[in-house]
Image (cartoon, rainbow, N blue to C red):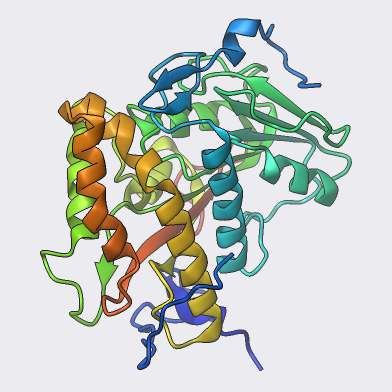
Length: 350
Protein backbone atom coordinates (compact mmCIF):
# COMPACT_ATOMS: atom_id res chain seq x y z
CA UNK A 1 0.00 0.00 0.00
CA UNK A 2 1.39 3.40 -0.89
CA UNK A 3 2.22 5.91 1.81
CA UNK A 4 -0.45 8.58 2.43
CA UNK A 5 2.07 11.42 2.48
CA UNK A 6 2.08 12.06 -1.29
CA UNK A 7 -1.55 13.12 -0.93
CA UNK A 8 -0.07 16.28 0.60
CA UNK A 9 1.94 16.99 -2.49
CA UNK A 10 1.04 19.65 -5.01
CA UNK A 11 3.40 18.57 -7.77
CA UNK A 12 4.39 20.79 -10.62
CA UNK A 13 6.75 18.33 -12.22
CA UNK A 14 5.82 15.76 -14.81
CA UNK A 15 7.07 12.81 -12.77
CA UNK A 16 4.31 10.18 -12.63
CA UNK A 17 5.21 9.09 -9.09
CA UNK A 18 3.93 12.38 -7.69
CA UNK A 19 0.29 13.16 -7.01
CA UNK A 20 -1.35 15.64 -9.37
CA UNK A 21 -1.58 19.30 -8.41
CA UNK A 22 -5.38 19.28 -8.17
CA UNK A 23 -5.44 16.78 -5.29
CA UNK A 24 -7.22 18.14 -2.23
CA UNK A 25 -6.57 17.23 1.39
CA UNK A 26 -9.69 15.81 3.02
CA UNK A 27 -10.61 17.48 6.30
CA UNK A 28 -11.46 15.52 9.43
CA UNK A 29 -15.23 15.70 9.85
CA UNK A 30 -14.86 15.42 13.62
CA UNK A 31 -11.99 17.76 14.59
CA UNK A 32 -10.96 17.62 18.21
CA UNK A 33 -8.50 19.39 20.44
CA UNK A 34 -5.11 17.71 20.13
CA UNK A 35 -3.30 17.79 23.43
CA UNK A 36 -0.84 15.00 22.66
CA UNK A 37 1.27 16.85 20.08
CA UNK A 38 4.63 16.77 22.13
CA UNK A 39 34.41 22.80 20.78
CA UNK A 40 33.12 24.83 17.64
CA UNK A 41 35.37 24.59 14.57
CA UNK A 42 35.47 27.68 12.37
CA UNK A 43 37.71 29.19 9.69
CA UNK A 44 37.15 32.64 11.19
CA UNK A 45 38.33 33.67 14.62
CA UNK A 46 35.39 33.52 17.01
CA UNK A 47 35.87 36.21 19.61
CA UNK A 48 33.86 36.31 22.83
CA UNK A 49 31.83 39.18 21.40
CA UNK A 50 30.12 36.81 18.96
CA UNK A 51 28.71 34.90 21.92
CA UNK A 52 27.58 38.14 23.57
CA UNK A 53 24.20 38.06 21.88
CA UNK A 54 22.02 41.11 21.30
CA UNK A 55 19.06 41.28 23.71
CA UNK A 56 15.77 42.78 22.53
CA UNK A 57 12.24 42.40 23.91
CA UNK A 58 13.29 39.44 26.03
CA UNK A 59 14.85 37.44 23.16
CA UNK A 60 18.47 37.08 22.01
CA UNK A 61 19.77 37.70 18.49
CA UNK A 62 23.10 37.14 16.73
CA UNK A 63 25.94 39.61 17.31
CA UNK A 64 27.86 38.99 14.08
CA UNK A 65 26.40 41.27 11.39
CA UNK A 66 23.83 42.50 13.90
CA UNK A 67 20.41 43.10 12.33
CA UNK A 68 20.87 41.08 9.15
CA UNK A 69 18.83 38.15 10.54
CA UNK A 70 15.68 39.09 12.44
CA UNK A 71 14.83 35.78 14.08
CA UNK A 72 16.12 34.93 17.59
CA UNK A 73 18.95 32.50 18.27
CA UNK A 74 18.03 31.51 21.83
CA UNK A 75 17.27 28.04 23.16
CA UNK A 76 13.52 28.36 22.59
CA UNK A 77 14.01 29.16 18.91
CA UNK A 78 16.72 26.53 18.47
CA UNK A 79 14.37 23.84 19.81
CA UNK A 80 11.72 25.05 17.37
CA UNK A 81 14.21 24.89 14.49
CA UNK A 82 14.92 21.26 15.34
CA UNK A 83 11.18 20.53 15.36
CA UNK A 84 10.83 22.31 12.01
CA UNK A 85 13.58 20.09 10.62
CA UNK A 86 11.72 16.96 11.70
CA UNK A 87 8.46 18.27 10.22
CA UNK A 88 10.06 18.78 6.81
CA UNK A 89 11.84 15.44 7.01
CA UNK A 90 8.49 13.72 7.64
CA UNK A 91 6.80 15.75 4.90
CA UNK A 92 9.58 14.75 2.47
CA UNK A 93 9.20 11.07 3.45
CA UNK A 94 12.63 10.98 5.08
CA UNK A 95 14.51 12.66 2.25
CA UNK A 96 17.24 15.12 3.24
CA UNK A 97 17.75 16.21 -0.37
CA UNK A 98 16.16 15.83 -3.82
CA UNK A 99 19.03 16.56 -6.22
CA UNK A 100 20.55 13.41 -7.82
CA UNK A 101 23.80 13.43 -5.88
CA UNK A 102 26.52 10.95 -6.79
CA UNK A 103 29.54 10.66 -4.51
CA UNK A 104 29.84 14.41 -3.68
CA UNK A 105 33.16 15.57 -2.23
CA UNK A 106 32.28 19.10 -1.06
CA UNK A 107 28.88 20.28 0.21
CA UNK A 108 27.90 23.72 1.52
CA UNK A 109 24.86 24.35 3.72
CA UNK A 110 23.95 28.04 3.85
CA UNK A 111 22.20 29.23 7.02
CA UNK A 112 22.79 25.91 8.76
CA UNK A 113 21.03 26.91 12.01
CA UNK A 114 21.47 24.20 14.64
CA UNK A 115 23.49 22.09 12.19
CA UNK A 116 21.22 19.05 12.07
CA UNK A 117 21.22 18.78 8.27
CA UNK A 118 25.04 18.74 7.76
CA UNK A 119 25.40 16.15 10.50
CA UNK A 120 22.81 13.88 8.89
CA UNK A 121 24.43 14.34 5.48
CA UNK A 122 27.83 13.52 6.98
CA UNK A 123 26.64 10.03 7.84
CA UNK A 124 25.16 9.53 4.38
CA UNK A 125 28.35 10.73 2.67
CA UNK A 126 31.27 9.91 5.01
CA UNK A 127 33.88 10.77 2.36
CA UNK A 128 32.40 14.22 1.72
CA UNK A 129 33.58 17.46 3.36
CA UNK A 130 30.45 19.29 4.58
CA UNK A 131 30.51 22.93 5.66
CA UNK A 132 27.62 24.68 7.39
CA UNK A 133 27.63 28.48 7.61
CA UNK A 134 25.59 30.67 9.92
CA UNK A 135 25.67 34.03 11.70
CA UNK A 136 25.36 32.40 15.15
CA UNK A 137 27.59 29.76 16.79
CA UNK A 138 24.64 27.64 17.96
CA UNK A 139 25.77 24.32 16.49
CA UNK A 140 26.86 21.32 18.63
CA UNK A 141 30.45 20.96 19.74
CA UNK A 142 30.83 17.30 18.88
CA UNK A 143 30.21 16.50 15.21
CA UNK A 144 31.42 13.95 12.64
CA UNK A 145 34.97 14.48 11.44
CA UNK A 146 33.80 15.49 7.96
CA UNK A 147 31.63 18.38 9.25
CA UNK A 148 32.72 21.90 10.12
CA UNK A 149 30.70 24.96 11.06
CA UNK A 150 31.74 28.45 10.03
CA UNK A 151 30.57 31.88 11.21
CA UNK A 152 29.94 33.59 7.91
CA UNK A 153 27.53 35.85 6.05
CA UNK A 154 26.38 34.30 2.77
CA UNK A 155 25.36 37.71 1.44
CA UNK A 156 29.04 38.56 1.01
CA UNK A 157 30.65 38.14 -2.39
CA UNK A 158 33.31 35.62 -1.31
CA UNK A 159 32.36 32.21 0.10
CA UNK A 160 35.38 30.79 1.92
CA UNK A 161 36.68 28.75 -0.99
CA UNK A 162 37.69 29.10 -4.63
CA UNK A 163 34.92 29.33 -7.24
CA UNK A 164 33.82 26.09 -8.96
CA UNK A 165 34.57 24.06 -5.83
CA UNK A 166 31.32 22.63 -4.43
CA UNK A 167 29.43 19.61 -5.71
CA UNK A 168 26.22 20.59 -3.95
CA UNK A 169 24.94 23.72 -2.19
CA UNK A 170 21.85 23.55 0.03
CA UNK A 171 19.54 26.20 1.50
CA UNK A 172 16.52 25.59 3.72
CA UNK A 173 13.89 27.97 5.12
CA UNK A 174 15.80 31.19 4.42
CA UNK A 175 12.80 33.43 3.71
CA UNK A 176 13.46 36.87 5.15
CA UNK A 177 17.18 36.26 5.56
CA UNK A 178 18.49 38.27 2.60
CA UNK A 179 17.74 41.54 0.84
CA UNK A 180 17.81 39.70 -2.50
CA UNK A 181 17.95 35.91 -2.64
CA UNK A 182 18.85 36.13 -6.33
CA UNK A 183 22.33 37.11 -5.16
CA UNK A 184 22.59 33.82 -3.25
CA UNK A 185 21.49 31.86 -6.33
CA UNK A 186 23.98 33.69 -8.55
CA UNK A 187 26.81 33.18 -6.07
CA UNK A 188 25.94 29.50 -5.76
CA UNK A 189 26.23 29.20 -9.55
CA UNK A 190 29.69 30.74 -9.31
CA UNK A 191 30.91 28.46 -6.52
CA UNK A 192 29.52 25.18 -7.85
CA UNK A 193 31.71 23.06 -10.05
CA UNK A 194 30.30 22.32 -13.53
CA UNK A 195 27.68 19.63 -13.07
CA UNK A 196 27.11 20.56 -9.42
CA UNK A 197 23.66 21.09 -7.91
CA UNK A 198 21.93 23.86 -5.98
CA UNK A 199 18.81 23.02 -3.95
CA UNK A 200 16.44 25.22 -1.93
CA UNK A 201 13.63 24.08 0.37
CA UNK A 202 11.45 26.91 1.65
CA UNK A 203 8.10 27.92 3.09
CA UNK A 204 5.77 30.16 1.12
CA UNK A 205 4.77 32.81 3.64
CA UNK A 206 1.20 33.03 2.34
CA UNK A 207 -1.56 30.91 3.96
CA UNK A 208 -3.75 28.89 1.57
CA UNK A 209 -7.12 27.13 1.76
CA UNK A 210 -8.89 24.99 -0.85
CA UNK A 211 -12.41 24.63 0.53
CA UNK A 212 -13.55 28.15 1.46
CA UNK A 213 -13.25 27.69 5.23
CA UNK A 214 -10.70 30.54 5.51
CA UNK A 215 -12.23 34.03 5.41
CA UNK A 216 -10.50 37.36 4.84
CA UNK A 217 -10.91 38.00 8.56
CA UNK A 218 -8.86 34.91 9.56
CA UNK A 219 -6.36 36.40 12.06
CA UNK A 220 -3.45 34.20 11.02
CA UNK A 221 -3.85 35.33 7.41
CA UNK A 222 -3.99 38.97 8.53
CA UNK A 223 -0.83 38.41 10.56
CA UNK A 224 1.05 37.11 7.50
CA UNK A 225 0.10 40.28 5.61
CA UNK A 226 1.23 42.47 8.50
CA UNK A 227 4.55 40.67 8.78
CA UNK A 228 5.00 40.86 5.03
CA UNK A 229 4.49 44.64 5.18
CA UNK A 230 7.12 44.87 7.92
CA UNK A 231 9.52 42.67 5.95
CA UNK A 232 9.25 44.84 2.85
CA UNK A 233 9.83 47.96 4.97
CA UNK A 234 12.97 46.41 6.43
CA UNK A 235 14.07 45.11 3.03
CA UNK A 236 14.03 41.38 3.85
CA UNK A 237 11.36 39.83 1.58
CA UNK A 238 9.50 36.76 2.85
CA UNK A 239 7.67 35.74 -0.33
CA UNK A 240 10.54 34.09 -2.19
CA UNK A 241 9.65 30.38 -2.44
CA UNK A 242 7.43 30.67 -5.51
CA UNK A 243 10.12 32.67 -7.34
CA UNK A 244 13.00 30.25 -6.80
CA UNK A 245 12.57 28.28 -10.00
CA UNK A 246 12.69 31.36 -12.20
CA UNK A 247 15.68 32.73 -10.31
CA UNK A 248 17.52 29.43 -10.84
CA UNK A 249 16.82 29.51 -14.56
CA UNK A 250 17.75 33.19 -14.86
CA UNK A 251 21.09 32.44 -13.16
CA UNK A 252 21.89 29.78 -15.77
CA UNK A 253 20.92 26.54 -14.06
CA UNK A 254 19.58 23.70 -16.19
CA UNK A 255 17.56 20.59 -15.29
CA UNK A 256 15.60 22.80 -12.91
CA UNK A 257 12.89 20.94 -10.98
CA UNK A 258 10.18 22.17 -8.64
CA UNK A 259 7.94 20.21 -6.26
CA UNK A 260 5.39 21.87 -3.97
CA UNK A 261 4.09 20.21 -0.81
CA UNK A 262 1.09 21.16 1.30
CA UNK A 263 1.72 21.40 5.05
CA UNK A 264 -1.44 21.78 7.19
CA UNK A 265 -1.38 24.59 9.75
CA UNK A 266 -2.84 22.28 12.41
CA UNK A 267 -4.38 18.82 12.80
CA UNK A 268 -7.47 19.44 10.64
CA UNK A 269 -6.84 16.76 7.94
CA UNK A 270 -8.58 13.38 8.12
CA UNK A 271 -5.51 11.46 6.93
CA UNK A 272 -3.62 10.25 10.02
CA UNK A 273 -0.14 11.15 8.77
CA UNK A 274 -1.19 14.60 7.61
CA UNK A 275 -3.01 15.09 10.90
CA UNK A 276 0.23 14.32 12.76
CA UNK A 277 2.17 16.71 10.53
CA UNK A 278 -0.47 19.35 11.20
CA UNK A 279 -0.16 18.89 14.95
CA UNK A 280 3.60 19.34 14.75
CA UNK A 281 3.16 22.33 12.46
CA UNK A 282 0.76 23.90 14.95
CA UNK A 283 3.25 23.37 17.76
CA UNK A 284 6.04 24.92 15.70
CA UNK A 285 3.90 27.93 14.78
CA UNK A 286 2.73 28.51 18.35
CA UNK A 287 6.28 28.16 19.68
CA UNK A 288 7.61 30.51 17.01
CA UNK A 289 4.93 33.13 16.46
CA UNK A 290 6.48 35.52 18.95
CA UNK A 291 9.93 34.97 17.41
CA UNK A 292 8.46 35.61 13.96
CA UNK A 293 6.88 38.86 15.15
CA UNK A 294 8.97 40.77 17.68
CA UNK A 295 11.91 42.11 15.68
CA UNK A 296 9.92 42.35 12.45
CA UNK A 297 6.98 44.35 13.76
CA UNK A 298 9.12 46.37 16.18
CA UNK A 299 11.80 47.41 13.67
CA UNK A 300 9.62 47.38 10.57
CA UNK A 301 6.43 48.99 11.84
CA UNK A 302 7.50 50.56 15.14
CA UNK A 303 5.17 48.41 17.27
CA UNK A 304 5.89 48.03 20.98
CA UNK A 305 6.23 44.59 22.57
CA UNK A 306 2.87 45.15 24.30
CA UNK A 307 1.16 45.95 20.98
CA UNK A 308 2.67 42.86 19.42
CA UNK A 309 1.59 40.56 22.25
CA UNK A 310 -1.99 41.87 22.13
CA UNK A 311 -2.02 41.33 18.36
CA UNK A 312 -0.82 37.74 18.78
CA UNK A 313 -3.65 36.67 21.10
CA UNK A 314 -6.13 36.15 18.26
CA UNK A 315 -3.38 34.88 15.95
CA UNK A 316 -2.57 32.03 18.33
CA UNK A 317 -6.25 31.11 18.58
CA UNK A 318 -6.53 31.12 14.79
CA UNK A 319 -3.52 28.82 14.37
CA UNK A 320 -5.32 26.23 16.53
CA UNK A 321 -8.73 26.66 14.91
CA UNK A 322 -9.47 23.35 13.19
CA UNK A 323 -12.58 24.67 11.49
CA UNK A 324 -10.28 26.59 9.13
CA UNK A 325 -8.54 24.20 6.73
CA UNK A 326 -5.44 26.28 6.13
CA UNK A 327 -2.04 25.15 4.94
CA UNK A 328 1.35 26.43 3.83
CA UNK A 329 3.08 25.53 0.59
CA UNK A 330 6.59 24.13 0.90
CA UNK A 331 8.66 24.58 -2.26
CA UNK A 332 11.57 22.32 -3.17
CA UNK A 333 13.65 23.50 -6.14
CA UNK A 334 16.89 22.06 -7.46
CA UNK A 335 18.97 22.73 -10.56
CA UNK A 336 22.31 21.85 -12.13
CA UNK A 337 25.18 24.07 -13.22
CA UNK A 338 25.92 23.16 -16.87
CA UNK A 339 29.00 21.18 -17.72
CA UNK A 340 31.80 23.01 -19.49
CA UNK A 341 30.73 23.60 -23.08
CA UNK A 342 27.11 22.65 -22.44
CA UNK A 343 24.58 25.03 -23.94
CA UNK A 344 22.68 26.89 -21.23
CA UNK A 345 19.00 26.14 -21.31
CA UNK A 346 19.53 22.71 -22.88
CA UNK A 347 18.63 20.84 -19.70
CA UNK A 348 15.19 19.33 -19.18
CA UNK A 349 12.56 21.45 -17.47
CA UNK A 350 10.07 19.44 -15.41
